[in-house]
Length: 465
Image (cartoon, rainbow, N blue to C red; front, side, top):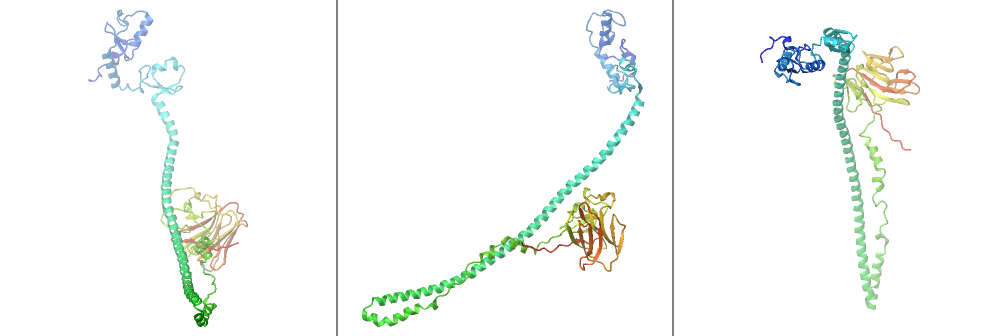
């Protein structure tokens, strides 16, 4: 369609409302009006005549002027005013003003209407600029929150991935441990069954030999009885002639030298094989199992630390990607024990070996180390060849020792409020902290080199009451 730029707005405006036609109708005199405007005019004048030429109309319902309607629509589109957001829906005028009372754009006709009496107005561009500024201020916290939620979601995704990896790894560890235990039980079962079969074989062989001797004796007695019965059936003379020989043969069979006395222990030693069987197996199993008084919690380990498979040793390594869970120690290169102590006495030995930097001690369960607060932490530290004792209540002090230790024993007496350190090999005292403990304490380990800090197992003993 050709451009309508050569039309003026007046050419396509209603003579009654002076706005661009809306649903125009055509009178027989060729003049057009908005349908609603014409009906209002006729209702007011009570006569159906043309507003322009005063010619009476013979039609109560004039036909729509579709051509003019299409021209108006094209004109409005080209002028960029067909969008309902830029035109007043009531007056088809540009929305040039903003009503401060109603908080909405209005046209100049709306401004003079009764609906907006005594209202305040501002130009649309000024109101838009001011409201954009206010909206940006409201949007700022949302953007910050959205960024935070993205980070939280990323942490959750990492945690979910880490949980799956943990599950697979721990399941493999469990299966390997039980495979080892099953192997031991299978071997011990076979050994016990073999011992049972061997005892059966030995005692069955004894019984077989005894039965063989008895069988020979029974055969000899049977023959003696048969021969004696034949002599008894013989005639008197023959009987008397063989009497002496027969009596001697019978008397020989009465000799007790041919009978063996009963022997004890001929049956299986059932009590030896099945008595306290599970206990004996468990006691023997101590050779392949060990117990550590402290187990490390990998969920607390600093990302730079590597915890061993058995959770008994730790060393420094390259930074690992792991969730930022609340328990994880980010500020200090340390890992905590899996269980805290809130009473009683507890001891654990740690092999420090040739470790050039290490810290051992306890940390209060409520302490948050991520904000670099060292309260609730008691420890001894070795670095640069020096020993130091550090706590929240005291200044760091040098601990003078005559040699480098290989194994450190940590001893906690919660009720007495003492935490002691000594040389586990020589038993010599290193340092003791004294405090009033009021909450659970977690074993604390800190390392910044490749040498292991290792919790040593304790000897397992069985007490029977």
